[in-house]
Image (cartoon, rainbow, N blue to C red; front, side, top):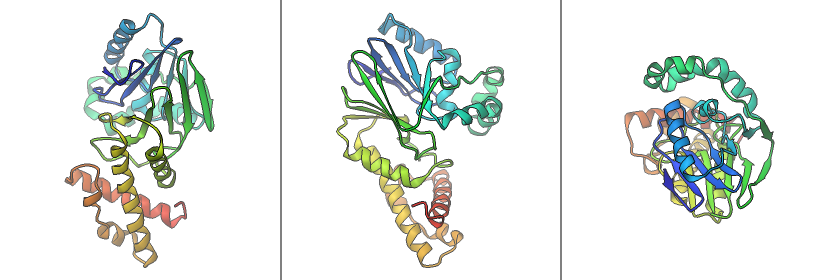
Length: 277
């Protein structure tokens, strides 16, 4: 586990999401969870060495399976955005299919676990903002959308650390299938203007504002090119083949990256055409 400050830690090695830990006088607060029981056991052992208190609460940065599964082995004391509830209820029946689609090897190796996993629904939900007073630490939870309708960020003002969920990732392109680009771009620009020292991404290595600027430049350049082509009467197919973003990619170009960019451009076209940004 990587130590960010005396109170803030993060584990980035799990096959699912990064898992943040804020040590408080009321116990450890987890931001997202591991996926596998063996990872949970390892995390619990680390926490026992750091605190005599049990986990105070788990905060879900959004509803996607790779961020929420571990609560089945951790605790039912969980917090998420209001809009996470129905999506997580659906996960109770769709989880095996989602695992097969995105992590097929991991699913096959742990099929029995995932076939019988009980998704722990949020115990507390909120719509806009929620502040947790944890004795010596304050955590500010804010609804931001972007990556998904239920996406939130978690800010620790004492240590100026932001847990950004999947609105910020490093070493890969952001996952955009359920996104709204307008709120996402707005959030990224807001983060750039914040007084923060450290950003914990949903996936990948810890970053500062430079990592955020790369994603923001990728989205904004895509938006501007798509908007101009759409205004000139280009079809979606023409836009997909005309937009060039290699100089704005937050990752190295590859065939897989090019395929993802084409999907991102198609989605951006749809949202601009519908007047969403």
